[in-house]
Image (cartoon, rainbow, N blue to C red; front, side):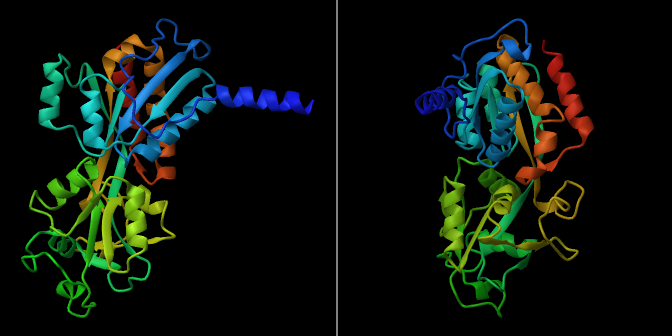
Length: 332
């Protein structure tokens, strides 16, 4: 009986679908399940890649979908970064491309070169709202509050000296005469692009900034260095709040802590608030019932709306998701 039990467990384990941590190039070649879209008849794969910021939310949605819908669909979610995701999505390697910034004009042009029109062949869905969060070491007891201008100036090249070796005392004279170690995500990530384009207004970043591919690396670097500072999405801070301190930002009316209650386009943390997105290849959704079905789940009350807060994002109004669902239904 014991041997039989072990055999059954092994078979069950091999049968389970898992959420992959890496990207895949099989998006355009996955098994197509067409026709009737009843859950018990669905099978095949859904391939998602892109934003590392959006990854925890989309991976959670995928996990809930595979558990609750009880069908044969395997949803694979990667986190290559927003720009890297679009490089796979545009040539047709993905069903969905997650992004922590809106698609760029040059990327839209590349889609059009392939005969794909944004709004028809490719659908843009906002998933939630994120708050760009500045994080410091737990032992840093002086920089827990900063003005928006101080954050911008400290990250701008040449603000204090030509070699960009900035001291904390350069920001405020009463702070330590210790060199600041600047960190952030690299150019593959929409978070970097948002920070560079929207926060720094496309001005050169300090030359001493060390940019990383993995957010976990940023967490480790800051948590081990009293003089470190970094930026990334609020969700990554929430999951590592035992190791890091979030800087409260003064946008002109007093320091504001990033929280789900303050992050929003019309809320106190609006200055560092941004939407996060997923982009759907509508052609694949028409051809593959599993892709269409997962898209419906993402936009349903059980998807992004319910799970956003659990992953450090502020959900959109329910009517926004309802409008997206209506748009999705129109492609059938």
